[in-house]
Image (cartoon, each protein chain N blue to C red):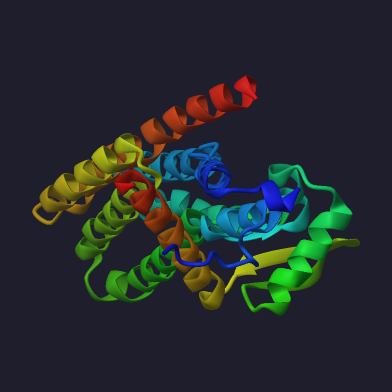
Length: 195
Length: 98
C-alpha cells in the first residue's frame, strides 16, 4: 500500500488534515451570554438603586461577579477536559481570558480603593481588549465591533460621573457580550444541526 | 534531481497524523483515530514510530477513570514536516518545468 503513495496523495492528505484542524468556531456562546447578563443586571440594578437613593445597597448586584467567576472556572475545567482536541485558538483564548480575569481583579481591588470613578472606564477598556482580540482570533466580526463599541464607551466613561458610567458599561456588555453571544449561539446550533 | 522525501513522513497515515497535529495544540488518540479513519492498532504503531523519531510527544493521563493518550507535535516534527512540504513543492515545480 505504502509504495503506491505518491506526491499527489501527499498533497491530498496534508490538505485534508489541515482542513479538519481548522474546523471553525466551536463556541456555543454560553459564557459570553452569562457574563453579559450578569454585568447588565449588576450595572442596571445599581443605576436604579442610585436613582432611588438606596446608597449603601446600590452595588449589591456586583456580588454576582465572583459567582460568575466560579461558574466559568468550573465550566472550562469540565469542557476543556471533555474536548478531545485543543486548537491553537483554544490555547490563545485561555491565555487571553486568564490575563483578563487577573487584570480585572487587580483593578477592582486596587484602583477602586484609590479612585472609584476610574474603575468602570478601565473595566470597559478591558472588555474591549478581550472581545476585540477574541473577535480577531475567532474571525468573528460581531465581537470586534463589540470591542470597538467598548473603546468608545470607555472614552465617554472617563468624562462621566459613576451613575452614567453604569449606563455606558451596560451598553458595552450588550454590544460586546450579549449580541455576539446570541450570534455565536445561533451559529453553533446551526453547525450542530448540520452534523 | 528530486530531493528524497523523508520516508518516515512519506506514508499515508503518518503524514496524516503529523499534518493534523501541525494544525492543533494537542489531540487525543480517539480524535486522531476518528479523523484519520485508522484502526487503533495501526495508529498505535505509527504513533510510536513518530514518537521514537522525536516528531511527536505522547502523554498518558486519565479523564476520570478513563485512560487518555494525548499527542502533540514537537519542534523537530514541525521542522521535518516543513522540509517534507518543501520537497513536495520542489517536485511539483520540477514537474511543471519538464
